[in-house]
Length: 402
Length: 78
Image 1 (cartoon, each protein chain N blue to C red):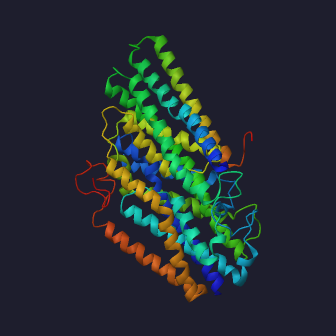
Image 2: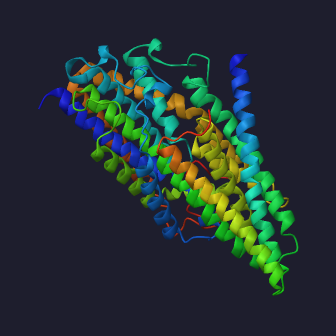
Image 3: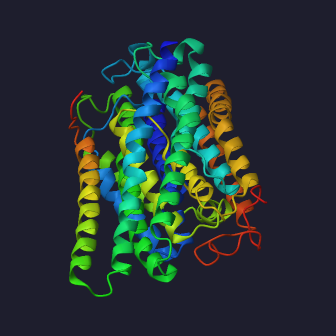
């Protein structure tokens, strides 16, 4: 087996692993509110979310093969890899992709261990930016695009992460306040029963759009790797097996449920009622759909968190745990640089050892570090059985303590 | 300043349409719940309530249509 082919295999496996972490990291975005208000039982919620993610992933026929162009310059505008990066069976490009994916995965698992919702897309972009700076230099990074539209690290990552939570907070607090005013005087139990149905609708929309948007990023990365190594030719389509593998990876990640994050988002931030839940879920679904329609690249995670926060602000007697919100904000601000540093370091290690050996070593390091973090998380396991326990009662996610 | 203009435009677009749908829909839904609650079995109220719920469902279905269309690469306008 040539070293280029070995690297390709490692990129494919790592990309699918990233897709899997993307799934469990983002279950909370769609389902945290429905689980917290008992609109859905925890197991039912993750099952529904996983099914809709799977369907959503297959709906993304129009896969963006230019996914990395948002932040780095390793592809031509048509999606084909830069010719200078495909020498030696695509080794230069494959090493950047592999190191970037490792950076994204490790940051995703770290934030999961801490029970913090952070953007999987930003982790992937961060890892790729770091690996690109290490491999090509600063010129390889697309910082602001050409100025005609929001693009690059600033336009696709920094700006959206600052303004999308603000939009979600405003929309959800308005929604919560309207819902509470309109149903004032209606028997709470009766109104709540209705709102729970509304929540399920909103959560389903979020799940479906998540599958459509996020699975295709990994599909794009794998297809790019196949093109770079000469195993796929066209930039107009992706191999069917790639589509199936990515869809299954993100859906199975979703199904195992990132319970630590679901707990923080559903119970830690605000003690959410069905009225708030329906406002938060509808706000998330609407903001995500509207922005993707207008081509504004925001993160589902930031919107979902902002919406839940907004539902607390819009409720006159709700308590918002600002300490938890602060921890999340720190995690958002550090996602890109932290994943970038990890991606860069990983690239250097791979480059020193070179080719397939370097790839194998960074893959092994990733597995070992991920395993350690998993073991540490299992000291305080959170699952469907205790996800809804009162916040402050043990067990609670480390690092997100109030 | 060009960047600032682009940011402001995206912010306002998403905020306004997002608020209309994201806060308007739960408000409409809440209105439906309220009409059911005060109907006391009166037929006209129930019909009104179900019309409101039907409208909510139609808007949600349109939302799904947008997701599917975007996934299939259909773009409206622009």
